[in-house]
View 1: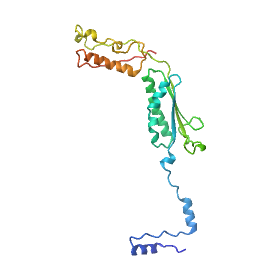
View 2: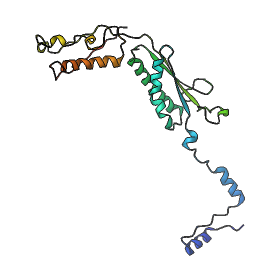
View 3: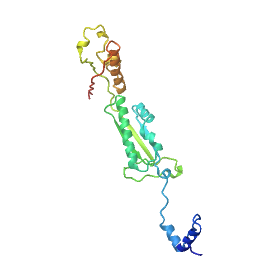
View 4: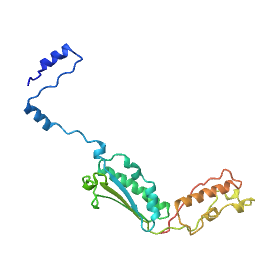
Length: 231
């Protein structure tokens, strides 16, 4: 065929600046070489994003796993494309911290959370491993990676002795409402022996302040708190 030279192209452009330049007619050998060396188009996010599933188990205390699965960053971020196991391990680390917070909130202060990433074959993955492929029979619908968290609660802690110490006892002694003011957290609804759940403890501390304010001390505040675990 007739090859379009640069001079001919310039002449066509000069005659019709708005007109399109004809595509160059490359020799077959050059065209074939260009196809071989041309880089492939970049993959889309949907093609490369890791499809992962989040699981959590806590055989002794199922409520712990349920609380985690109801609200965790690992699940919330599933719709945000992620392309490396390194990034997924970071998400897993953050989620494991959230799981430990759940342990403490339920009174399990010696517990631990075991977090792993597994491939479709059930084997543990390392941070630098290649992203595994989904099972062929699933047509890409099954997860490539399973993010697995296992709760090991340990013993449940309970509330021991508690004491409320006024910073200025002189403001209370001899006052008509003194007998109504709490001296322990049991007076605020958290008796000794109750599970030491962090939400319950904090609620009792807030109740102490409210009791003071409702009994003639509107400026009452919690100056400080100190908690001790008896292992």
